[in-house]
Image (cartoon, rainbow, N blue to C red; front, top):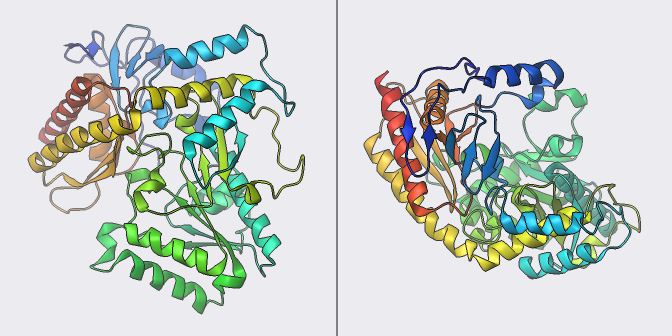
Length: 458
């Protein structure tokens, strides 16, 4: 699917002035096209394609451009700023490290790293006993893949098989793309890993009255018919906690049935918690909605409050499978990001953001449900939990997914002072900083409603 091309030319739009939004220029603001053009000239185009907004600064749940326009942020950059943009506690923690000074120390010990790991494991709770820190989410899922296969090797498995879910996304490095099911995006690899298997995602519109457990059973029987023995050939299950593009959660019994299969056959259960972790869904981690206990969780995004911090958490016997020096990384666990990680956990705990996110999630979904009732021919599904949500749009005549309509709604939201996640397909995703006020949250829902109404009338 080709990326939607948004116009960079300033367009006169109605001015906006509220306590949370300010639009006082044409949008995109004058000068935006010039900066984006410089990026076109010198940066790989793979980084491009977002809505044409050049960020100048971001504070809490607000984004500002150089012209002084202000947006309500419903993206958290991409579900990173869970504790708010430029969080004061995070900033102070990093400044203290810089003033020491100590930027990096590779794998040599430092007290900040020790303190962070203690706090992280206490925050996660049982069964997690140790963590391995990294810089990017894709590194964390790669490490999870390695650990699952090393565990299978230790157990004497015949093959190093990993079962993944179609449509899940785990990152852009080689192993992570093998775990993801987008064939076009992994053609560059030149081959497919014969020991990575994908089973269908149990979308609510595909279950057709079946339970999640029976849906899983059908998928696993197909694997077994192809000669895959779960006990001998499978080392791990890797699940993105929800289907990213649409914030689609699994049926609880689907995940619980996976856990039962794992326990029966000596298989590790891993969750990719990049988007779901650190209070985003109204729980500390998204897997907690399913009533299961994973062996590994791969985390990132909101973990660092805006700085590059990711990690894998698990039981000590799994985390210690790699020998000394066998799984290290140059910039991982540096004092700067560890200080930020400590501050993130302190903010989540100190501001009761887990419970607050659950409460605000109820407000958000109540507001979105009113929009769905207002536009039943346009909004086919509302999905998500806590402060991660997706509205799926359809064509009113055909009922088919309507990506162009969705792109236009996202663009009009930007012109009105609201930034949403443009997925490039029929979904608009919403994930504001967890610190957003109730008033700003509901104002944003109203703006989305205005945009849908205006695009529908065009």
